[in-house]
Figure (cartoon, rainbow, N blue to C red):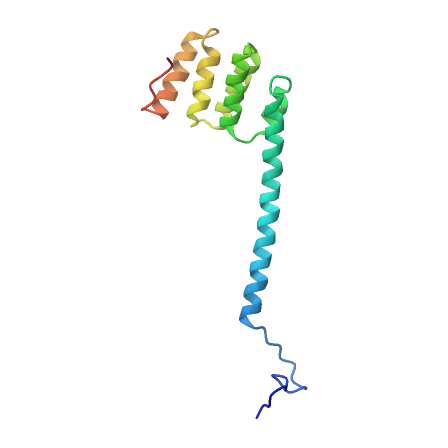
Length: 140
């Protein structure tokens, strides 16, 4: 019979007991640490993309290589087109569509970029955008 204060096993027994609550706590700590590492790396990627987007007119190549999101690249394309940098805007619009062929905003950006240079290509790109988003009213 075991008395209060006695170890759970006799001193000569080599068995080790892991209490389920301790194991669960250790698993929770490991999962939380992995989540912190993962989210920290994603935050770094996000910050890198934001800094590249802030200087988009000066560093088009940095934006294309730093941002994974095709919609961000398409938005930067529209920003460049507005600033009058048509070649860079067209390049980013094509990159956006290459990265994500099902991106509605990418096809709109490509249609806008091609508007003066290739009207037929612009109509095809805008038709593709309309096919991806049938509720879109088109360019006004």
